[in-house]
Amino acid sequence: MKYPPSLIALIRELSRLPGIGPKSAQRLAFYLFEQPREDIERLAGVLLEAKRDLHTCPICFNITDADVCDVCADPARAQNLICVVEEPGDVIAIEKSGEYNGLYHVLHGVISPMNGVGPDKLHLKPLLPRLQDGMEVILATGTTVEGEATAMYLQRLIEPLGVVVSRIAYGLPVGGALEYADEVTLGRALSGRQRVTK
Amino acid sequence: MKYPPSLIALIRELSRLPGIGPKSAQRLAFYLFEQPREDIERLAGVLLEAKRDLHTCPICFNITDADVCDVCADPARAQNLICVVEEPGDVIAIEKSGEYNGLYHVLHGVISPMNGVGPDKLHLKPLLPRLQDGMEVILATGTTVEGEATAMYLQRLIEPLGVVVSRIAYGLPVGGALEYADEVTLGRALSGRQRVTK
Image: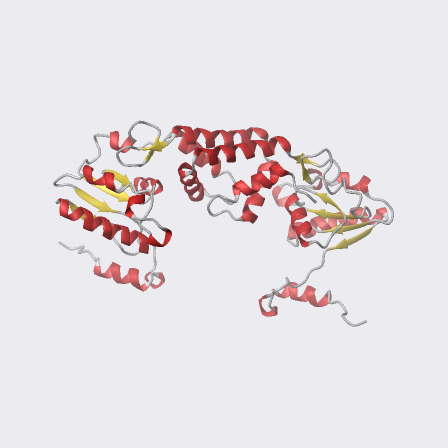
């Protein structure tokens, strides 16, 4: 039995997406086959539209459809705080927390020599001209090996410029039981303990 | 911070796909954002092309881009064997096994009263005019509760028509250790044992 070429092409394109293996791609293709034509046209449409409208903000490299992203354009945000994150998705995650009212800088990756990603491949240099005396830079890259290495690299790069550099806190996730926390996290949570009495 | 509408639309459409939750949809959207324009255009293209070219075979309801599917159109396939499966993906799985040379009939679902799917919602009736004396129908629906119920329903419907009805074998998956098999499967594997000496 030969499979229809357009079915094979669809499965091949879907299996290129991250986290979607050949079996999932096949399942997705059959699912899409069962959907009404309008739904498929809408999906294809939003794909093309997103690619046409979206680009990175020239200041912070967050995703935007405007000249400058919403955060950079908002004078009500604290202008002396820059939070450095790995990916645009991290901005959304932090915005959802509602705990932050400063600016961002999106690296679009982490330093990872194993994958051939050096500092030059990240949007790292454009951060430097943004820094001014009295500013605080929060390093909010992940707590993975690569995230830590990137944070350390940034710290060494930025500290001489006379800005305050901080790192997001390590500790227990909220709702987490102590016995399920790994020992490294637990150790960091202890050493990073904060006084609750004054 | 407001998110660009085309980003929101893309995330919303992606999260409608089966097995893709809101977080995966967000990750996928950012991944797609990073890809070159040609890749996105190709993905959108194959989606529309697949929807335009593909339809179900009028005889067996397998997916095809021709008038009649490859299997139904092939006179070299055993014409007295019909294998009934749930989904088009099952046809691919059986073809890959290389153990079958008969015809198919794709139900496009299983009987599932819980989900409001009765026999009328499946491509079940068009199977009956295909059946002739001396034929064998292999019930190859899944071994889930719904798959079993569908197989039983079909058996009762077809048996009076004078055809041989069989069910794919239950047993241990190849490469499986006995101690990891569940007791029901093990029981079925024992009762379905086959002589190896003549």
